[in-house]
Length: 457
Image 1 (cartoon, rainbow, N blue to C red):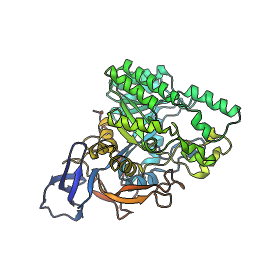
Image 2: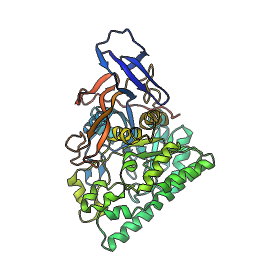
Image 3: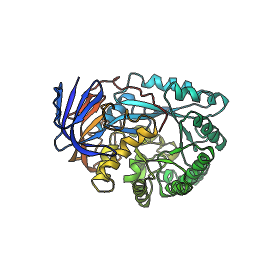
Image 4: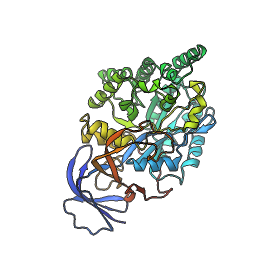
């Protein structure tokens, strides 16, 4: 099916102009003024902005957590992503201790294959790096197109690796051109503070926040980038949330080290006052926790200074019933929040509409940088002839209110309930097919395609 988009304001990371886009066979075929093509479908984009489809580089769909799973599976989560203008997500496979990386890949393929509506890719979380897993790295990169690997510096006993394993993984991944990212928080110090608070009878969600002070993230971030400097690999810090951690990244650039940093939309908008609402605060129990207002200021400045490259969602929702697992003990509250559908509209409203970032920066943060860093550019993340026709037709002036009553995520509350925002995704195309229009979904489960990624730029 061919589609012609007329008179849209096309915005990429570098450009801003008005033109038509002709789409055929899933790709952008031609861009120009007053294109003469006859198309099966014509979209009038007068007074609308056309962005590249969003890439969310950090999501957790159907993620195992103790006896349960995060509440959005591959069908519901990728559907919600499309409603919010995100056409590609990168999910995390998590290796089990003493098991192979490929066994984890097969487990996640079993949940994802044939079930997604958006396109998707995988990061590999390595929780047990040894000689056996070392031997799997090359095939994952070269045969499976999984070019990014994550380590945890927290959660001892289940996910956490030590510095020696981090260095070994970095050395192996570097051989084949991949990238290593980190959940950079000091797990041992956090575990000590959690145990201390529980022993003293402090069990409300507030103490989830107080058990993860800024220093736990700053220290681990500094240690991670130091190990990366020694290995010579370019590191990627996920969900950076605070000024202290950002300063460790900033300080490392003084020695000419290249570091990629990601923050999440919640850290730019919410602050720690959400932990003063009794058990309702469980809605915002995530790791790292939401920080202080001064950290919001620092993160926006970090974006302006080019220290932060991507804004993700870290989408990992749990229903209220699941959150109630920790009603009497904050350490048992499932960690995570919903945001896959809200990320792009929130960043436009809080960033572009409030003159904190430009339209070109917005595209960099929501799509282009992730595509470049994770080996999908220029197939994804831009509007160019030959690229996948992943496009968002966006109304920059439409105001609407976020609510669990109207969102499409499988979560019975919203962290942003009642918040009025400016800017709305009106039409979303995925590989040249109408995915969202008139607030309806037009693709079926299984349309989403697994993206084998290349070596990152």
